[in-house]
Amino acid sequence: MNQHYGKLFEVQIAGESHGHGVGCIIQGCPAGLSLNESDIQIELDKRKPGQKLTTARTEADRIHIKTGVFNGKTTGAPILLWMDNTDTRSADYEALQATPRPGHADVTAAEKYGGFNDYRGSGPFSARLTAPLVATGAIARKLLQQHGVEILGHVQQLGGLKIENASDTAIRTNVANSPLRCADAKMEKRFEAALQDALKAGDSLGAVIECRVRGLPMGVGEPRAQSVESAIGAICLGIPAAKGVEFGEGFAAAAMKGSQHNDAFEKVGTGESNKDHVTIRTKTNHSGGTLGGITTGMPLIFRVVFKPTSSIAKTQTTLNVKTGKQSEMSVIGRHDPCVALRAVPIVEAAAALALVDLMLQAQKIQRVLK
Image 1 (spheres, rainbow, N blue to C red):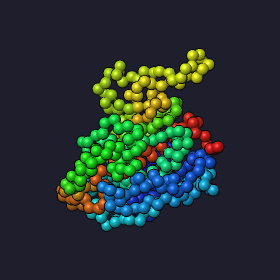
Image 2: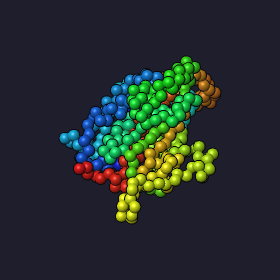
Image 3: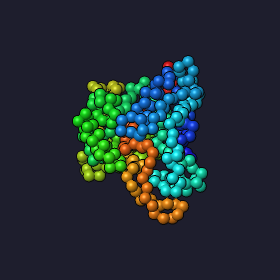
Image 4: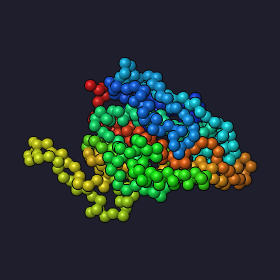
């Protein structure tokens, strides 16, 4: 089971939803970064369960740095992070051995691993495993912040409700204090009403999370397999319930003409000769901050689509794999009515992790910090 990310900033995630806990090992983190557990905890608290309109599971997600930090600085050695599981109800999942949940990995996991898979709380397939991803992202984010890079995420769409053109200021000001990670106070009320309606019906909703990255230098990323899009997309599409990623205009580009989508170049500065430094930028940003898989220096903009939560109370039809007969089921347990409410810090962490790795490859971040 491969849960490994990165080439130079490498992360290996481990654990299960109802096992002893979840954690990760990070290799390649530059030495000399000031780091303590509170730096990581602040991001984990945005993701942890038990918040408004999320699962009732109440994990503290208390982070422990086991190795790789000495005297408040990273040493360059592997960093081991760990969080204990403290609030599990494994009995809720016993029936799933016979009646797999529609929309879940119960059947595919059992087939893949010969029935030896840990089915409690979906085991390693659970969104619980995004906690160490967020913890890793907190470290990556701190590295990026030292190089002037800012990451801004928000719930742009929930069900059929969509926020058009939220400003960076609105995201900075409102999202941190919004239980629904919404940048628009009026739309947040509509988001909440839609979620309450879904809960009353025993159902769930899908969503779109938009992420903006500002301050990236030009020249980060490689063509094809190590493009900015493929690096971020690979991590984001590994997030449970993520079903699509788009950059810039994304799928809307299919309805545009080349003359509409092309971003014209212009210079920034007053350089008149070849010896003068001239910064090039684009007048528009339909491409979302990348060309040829390489950053343009413009804001990097991408969105992740999340399907509706699969575990719902509403009665559904499934197959009893022991009797071979169709049966009805209602999923019991504690689940989010919309995964996106806790997924904003996860998507931000995915971006941070991918970009730190690419920045190290481009030598924009040094291996020893001064």
